[in-house]
Image (tube, rainbow, N blue to C red; front, side):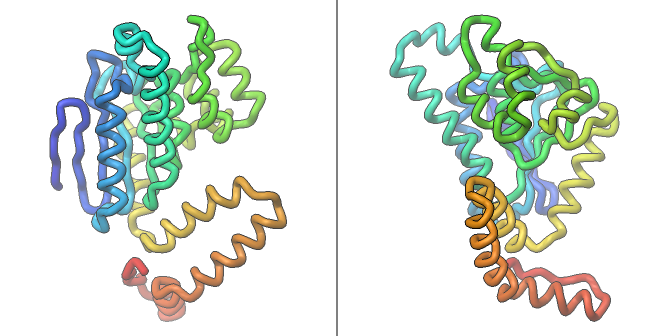
Length: 263
């Protein structure tokens, strides 16, 4: 296992699974300018690292997974230019999660609010402790959760998203599961094992196929039905001609585990 520490972001790698841990527990693991930059840098590095097949996004132990943006920074820099700069940087970081050619799993133990809930919604998968809670509470202080709305409305049904945005109420893990914001809600003492098993299962697949499939999944979502089928058909041809596909089919017929080459 390899590990490296940053004042605000911890990085550790076990096999082909990289874990990024938000490490501002005294500030609710909030997305300060520095945290956004650290996450963006770590995601860029993971994209180019062939040893990384899966990324897990976690937070330092405590009651809060991520409290969203650091409002103290906004109070100290009360200007349109500062707000615009932070919003743009954060939005790019969230999009980098979707664009990353490796699956990203949110491991949520605690409360995820505003941009923290956005962070969960932006990840490909999310596993939460059944004690976790989620909210977009901006409306309670006169701020509509505008950029969180983008990720959340693409992750759950519109009426569920509007319910969160209009009320600002905390929802429990079972409600988040019903809404589709998370994939599973498990007892806190099973969270690590559940995420580890899921990450290992995904990491065992062909990295080429997973990267191709993730990109295709998000791209086809934005297309009309006929265009989505046309696009998927084109990608399917490329997939079938890939070396890993040939190996997978051969391994299946020979009843042996495949040996992936990542291409």
